[in-house]
Image (cartoon, rainbow over all chains, first blue to last red; front, side, top):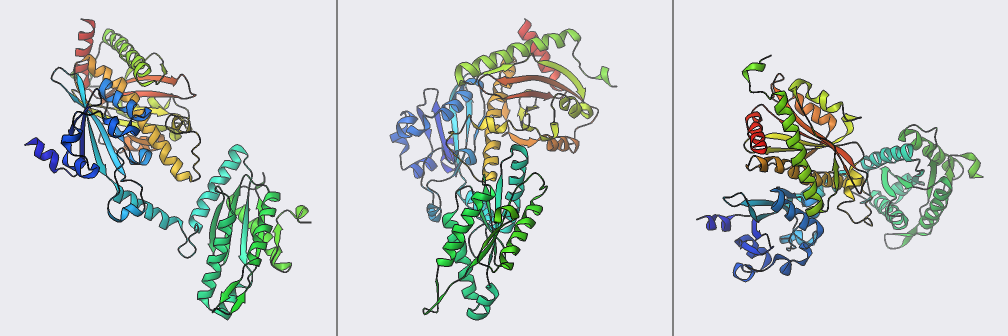
Length: 305
Length: 211
């Protein structure tokens, strides 16, 4: 009767002995692995799944066999134990089915542990939902770059890093010049195209550790970790020129050029909060606007010259 | 208080229990090194009894910045049940992560890093707790089941205790020890918290051990 129960479960059940030889392989495992129970019983698990011969898995097995430990193999740290294909449309997002697994001891009547039960649960759906939700809370839906909420959080963290480890960073405030005019002349849909374009040009030149976010309407912000204002200035100039060189085709005939103004601020000892830094970058941005737009200004006036 | 109504340890038994712990934890450490390649040093274990209401105070006294420390908590059930807590001072998670990760993996997302640190904490906690408790249960020739480990920071541990249904006057037996990893700059504390119901079983263990 128990065999039927084991086969009826919507969970993978594998039992191995202390020599890592497979003694049970339930129906769920047959289906996912495409290996029949008959074919796999008696063989060493590593012959079929060599990647399991890893320090982490061996450590876990040993702790079950020697200490009677219950080992919980989390999806977050390991993603999966058995490389089975993800089912249905999850195939597009995951290389393999995401699994939450446990390793538990089976004791003989005399208390000895000679077998380990491995349970495998498919958690791909929840991982997918969790990721989608996370993206939704961090992404700007129009441009696909980070949103304001994410920026605020990261800025706070960078500030903490700076204070603890003296890791200098700079921020860029970017504003599209005459954006109202673009919207009024060519319509909001074309305005959206411009916003996406600027986001995409900026994305293409930032480093992996830089953080690009849409700050508000036509404003963007970039955090450049480990970068002083001098480095930030040359980056900003590069971006400004790149944007100026781009041409957007309006209704397949008219070429429209947009420009951006940029303000830069670098962390200094006197800055207490992310808000202060943002406001310095904003002041620099205002300077760029006041001096004729399509230019870069740094908060520290010494450098600007 | 109601001291006489419940079974208590005599001074002699407490001494013996401490010795038992010493030996069972010592053998856990030896096995961890031999079987798992995890090399830790244990301080001399200590046993004391405190009221539930004084528990947090008693634990917190030994850890600076208790509110921000990381705690792995795992409940266990067997002949007697209890809670095992592994406590790491603030900032140790990053070191622990090096047990599980390839050094070249770079994570920019702070959230993801935190999740991994938490998971590493749980995994190593699970192994250490299991090894130490397993040995005690081995002594009383009994078996044990665990719930999955949980991680939290000191502040939350405190409030989870304050909101729990535990009787504030109840006496808890604390078995505690400090430990450090030989090959890494990691140190922490292990606390096993057991209620009154564990006393007869621990006495049994003592008799067996001494007999």
